[in-house]
Length: 139
Ligand code: GDP
Image (cartoon, rainbow, N blue to C red; front, side, top):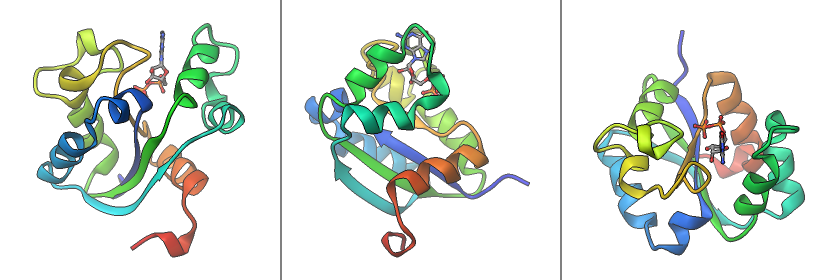
């Protein structure tokens, strides 16, 4: 059975371009409830740990440098079928391939600067949420 929570980050480029508001609006309009949220800034070590699944890939260095280049918004989102529905809302990893009306189509600049993160499985949603939030930070 699919879970009812996913984890997202509004990435540094979208924060810098003042897209926090419009992106959160789309998330709420799509029926997601915010269960936890924080405005924070990953250091390089934390970005490397968060994306450790990509160690060794050619984009790992660029990705972790970018993700530690400025503040992000991290959040746990709640909705039925959360992981799959949120992946649909954000669109493909490569914004050139993202469907019309998706967050990445609207706000991403490139594959590396693709505006938002969304968990790709229920298991990773739990791991990623636990990376940022303790139990008392969730409402
Ligand atoms: P996501 O789940 O759609 O975010 O994609 P992944 O978990 O596979 O990758 C994490 C992030 O790494 C993506 O959001 C991209 O910003 C970046 N990324 C993934 N694949 C590539 C790639 O082939 N080239 C570059 N430059 N960045 C990539």
